Every structure is written in structure tokens, then in C-alpha cells.
Length: 304
Image 1 (cartoon, helix red, strand yellow):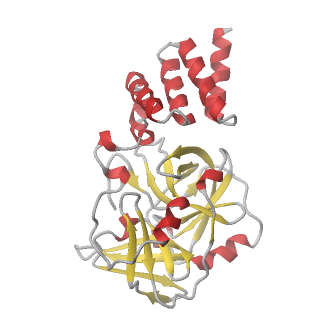
Image 2: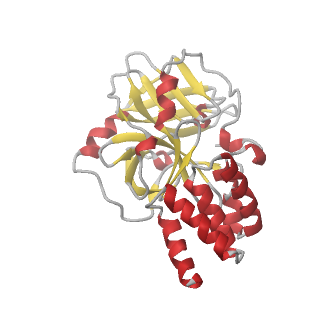
Image 3: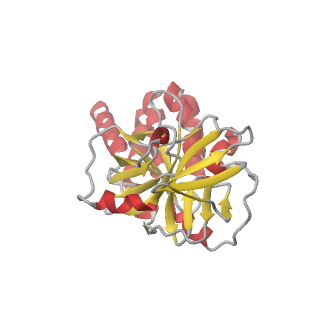
């Protein structure tokens, strides 16, 4: 696994009792979730997760298979070796191509249809588990990025779940478990399924070395703003948060999270009227933004 300011994520453990899908749905989806085994250049064995997204195609994170000397998947006691790969290195999304993989594909949705506090669940292989495990959570933030939404959900990650599927409570695939921020109050992110669809149309390659780092592992100044605000929020560096979120708004004025971050920073800096305005902007873009609504309500009591 790669490590930087944000870490490649493995699996999802729910932090709260979220709504669960109908009985039988998880059972029906598990045949589409596979364990991925890799041998790294040092000869060590690693494990990740993946999901069948089309006939003979398994989606996972590129950081699971990058630079591997050997890759295979296992299901029902059998092993299958990919014949090629379709890689979107920047977005940390890889599709493993097989021949004769008799496993059902899941239904693909869109991260653009998600709502805050919407129930989601994941199926993956934590700690090299023999069977796929299911965990539950809800959407806490959506970050527009390259024609999709990075999904933050209420869950923490363990080794073995990178590339595991994130479903809505009707069993539709909306993302892949991917990365987390460091520290106790970590944020947990999933890349959008929207990136899978165009990658399916790309030509197959032979298994290759990583050609470029993923978006979360580039130099700090090149990372998406939603990543750059994490450290100042965790360290309560409100001046830095104010500066970063101001630049974020300039580039993405339609992003509710950018306005919320600026409102939070200014609230903590005592700039209450400016904070009130920016929190209102966040709510105007997302009426059900829980953090912005709570902060604005508390701030309004101080202003009254």
C-alpha cells in the first residue's frame, strides 16, 4: 500500500447504525465481489478487493495491482488470472480483464445521484478474510471531481478492502473504497463509479508498471482542494483553511463543501458575518448539508 498525507484505504467498518438493505440483497451481491491477490516486487503477498462491473471485467484500485509481479483473483476456492488491464492511473481505477469469468456483474449507478446522509454499504475482504464481510454507513460529503463525485462516508478502513464496492441500499454500485486521511478523526473516501463506464470503452493493455501517481499521491499543491483542507481542519489551522477554501471557491463556486470550509474557518476566526454568508451559500447549494446547517444555526444564535 502507498502512504502519504492520505493513505490507501482497505475496508469499511461502519461507525453508526445506518439503514440496512433488504434481506437477501447482500447475499445476492456477494457473488460479484472478489478477493485480489498480488505479489509485489519484493516477493510479498498482498490482498485487495474488487467487483465485477461487466462481463469478464473486475474493477479495483490501481494501487492494489500497481507494479505487481503477479495478480490473480479468487472466488469459491478457484483462482483466475487476468489476461490484461485497463488502467486509469490518475483516478486510481483499474479494470482487470479475464476470459470466461462466470461471475455476475453488478448494476452501475452514478455518484451524481447521491444525497447527503443517504444509506450506503460495502462488501470487501478485511484482513484477508476468507469470506466477504458487509458494513454499513451513510454519505457525509460529496466532492465534484472530474465528472464524478468523490464520496465521503461514515466508515473506517482496514487492510484488504481497497477496491471494494460501495452500494446504495437498493444494491446499485456507486463507488469503490479507496483512501483515508491520517489521524483519529479520519475522513474516508470512495472514488465514483462514473469513472468505470468510460474506462470500459478503452483498449486492453498488458499488465504494466504504474505510469503516473494517483490524484491523492501527487505533491500537496497539485491535490484536489477537498484533500488540502483536511490537515488544517484536523490541526485547527483556521487561517490556512480560510486561504485554501477561498481558492477552492474561486475554482469550484458550485461546490457546497468549499463554502462550508470557508464558513467554518471564518467562524473560528471570529469573522461571524462573513461566516454566516458563506454558510448560507453552502446551504443554498445543498439544502440538506448537515454540518453547514448545524454551524449556521449555532452562528445565528450568536448574531441575534
